[in-house]
Image 1 (cartoon, rainbow, N blue to C red):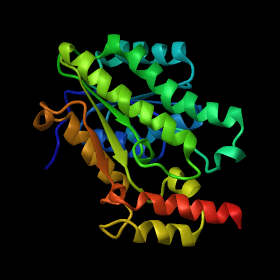
Image 2 (image 1 turned 135 degrees about the vertical axis):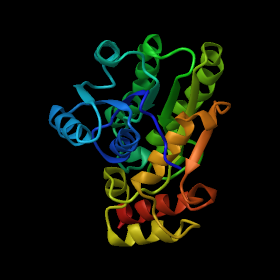
Image 3 (image 1 turned 30 degrees about the vertical axis):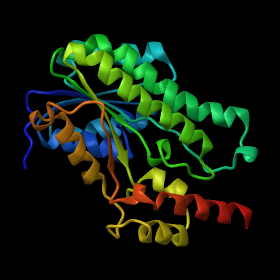
Image 4 (image 1 turned 120 degrees about the vertical axis):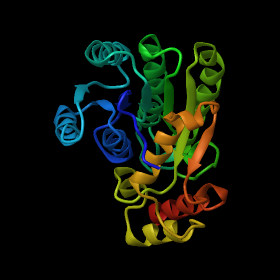
Length: 265
């Protein structure tokens, strides 16, 4: 199906690289007006340059840990394009480590980016969402519901993100705003996979643990996001949607085991 979002304003937090940039590119190809937010001005500029070949796009440099900065981005986006029709919140931090090998600052950093950052995005953008009719999509992770060794910080943070999704689906449904989460599985050629599967052996183990027998691509996640934002999903809210080739059915543990073996060797 060819989606048409030519009358939509889409803001992607964390949208300068990886899965989130792939989502932004999907919406750009479907005609949406785009805004991307990321910490690195250099990456923001590069993303806007690429997106502008397909649609009108603007970018902002801000850290999701800074509430006022994210609120300013939302305000400025709305001033430029109008109310936000689709909000994608995808900023995330991660590194593999056992809990006893993790500093308090390291644990806090992931919680601040993933969980507190999601709260900042949700709270600060609510006033700028189109009501009724807008869609909010949080980017979660299998660690939210599948315990994984070496990932205690991410498991805790993403579980919180999924619960925020459910609660806000209840609270914001009265405004006609739908809130859902996408849970990407192993997605090839992304920074996340490079960090969590740094060796060829781990990459192979991850791929073999996916029931569909392959890693996903960024277009898989973009397609899911566009479906959730489309009229066809108008009665879907509060959903935590794995897009992972079946990985969360049992293969997730293999990555934790592989990371543990690498760290202990």
